[in-house]
Amino acid sequence: MNILVIGSGGREHALAWKIAQSPKCDKLYLAPGNGGTGEVATNLDINPKDHQAVIDTVLEYQIDMVVVGPEDPLVNGLVDDLKAHSKLTELLVVGPGKSGAILEGSKQVAKDFMKKYGVPTAAAEVFDESNINEGYTFLESLRPPYVLKADGLAAGKGVLITDSLQEAKQNLDDLILHKKFGDASARVLIEEFLKGIELSVFVLTDGKDYVILPEAKDYKRIGEGDTGLNTGGMGAVSPVLFADKDFMKKVEEKVVIPTVKGIEQEGMDYCGFVFIGLMNQSGEPYVIEYNVRMGDPETEVVIPRIKNDLVDLLEAAATGNLANSRLEVEPYTATTVILVSGGYPESYEKGKEITFKKPIKSVVPFHAGTKLEDGKLVTNGGRVLALTGLGKNMGEAISRCYKAVDLVSWEDMNYRKDIGFDLQKLGQ
Image (cartoon, rainbow, N blue to C red):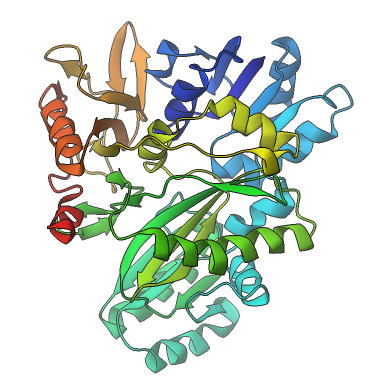
């Protein structure tokens, strides 16, 4: 079949890399793709926000399956528009419609959903400009740290955490009154802080049945030791050592099953991935958030650990036949280190030429913010490359990542030097 992957980041490169290995995949396209995805697929210069352009592309290239990578087109109804077209009734689409994507599009809707279906999560209240004073009072009732989340989409950066009550109140002002994240922060969720270790669990569902994909842990802060500003993710590891069979059984029974049951009972149009951000608090799983797509950079360590033909799984989801699917997982460890532009996650420059001392063979390089310009590979975003290492254990996988880092350079390149180190200590 001819397959179109929507998106341009490391997540989409990893998905395309795996899809391209399937004997079921005849032609593979990415829209728009990036400077590295041309190695596994044909890039098409299309803006995913232009739904008509996507529809025209599906018709022109006789696409049989569309896989939507990022959250923005999902929340804005690309899947609904594809399914509504009279000439695309046979098209297989992986990604939820707007009715399902609201679980990421609104933190408040997600919280209400969790409460309704008994999914364990932190206590929270939502505030806007009309009741911001009540927000100050609510902050005063909490113990630090204080967690504030923009209600809408903020490119993975809409969470502010501080130990200072005064700073928390200022953050509330910045989000609501000064529109730090635009319309996304017109409403703000103030949430009870959960103490523990974070991990991400990924589910592929057809809206009634599911398979649980390999879990992962990502590293959000820009600096070593989880310091500095939040980013879209500076690295990830899979498997997660503390997510043993007993813990994952709790995750399935207390989180995954009620989540999928809720999706079905709400009548949501949901075929695709559910990213469940979790906190392991004293051995119990609590949901921090839902995303309605795969995470980035977690995809770059989860997808390489899937032994199945990914197209088989995606086809089963899109046709409502996941009940008959069984996931097979590779036994090795995958780690990824993200190379970012200097200044990220704040202001940074693009267009820096990326050079390689020699071809990278020890890891799988997934491109994120890159593009080809006059035959040269240059930076085109904050997160530029994800170097994914595979090994028989975490130490071997991490070692391969950092050896590969030494082969890449551009002006002001930055990266974290401690990805996975905390989990290695746990395992000692």
